[in-house]
Image (cartoon, rainbow, N blue to C red; front, side):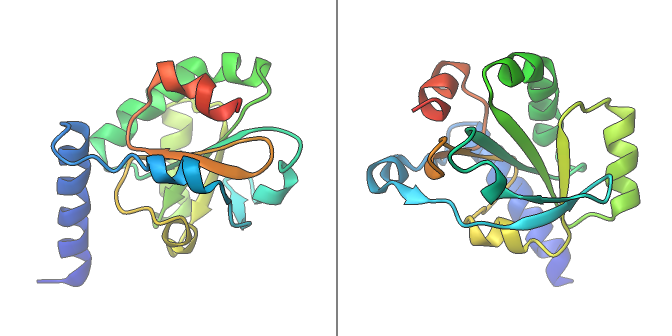
Length: 166
């Protein structure tokens, strides 16, 4: 069987089990270790380069790793879309990072779903790999100082402000 198909099936199963609460990967140890987020630069869907370092010391950032074929990702993207105005008012940056899909497909998805935040293209999955993303959807919360404070697979409104505004 093709390695891509096997990897896709594995990621989908992992995401499903994570969201069902059978396999938790929330990394509380990340909060204790206070790891600084690794910088990266990716192109957005409008062909602009976006670097994580642009926000260090300025604003907290939420990285959201996703794919268009993932049903849970689509659900989480709707939540982000609905909450985005409030996040912007709080000075929180949302960077939705698509993993491995063609630009035209991501642009079509973004337009169809009227996503109102930056969508970046991680064409080879290198940024996802550098952050240890092991399934989608994955949120990585980075505080204003550039420290990774948590990694989650679903949006928890109760913990959101606590994590990002630390």
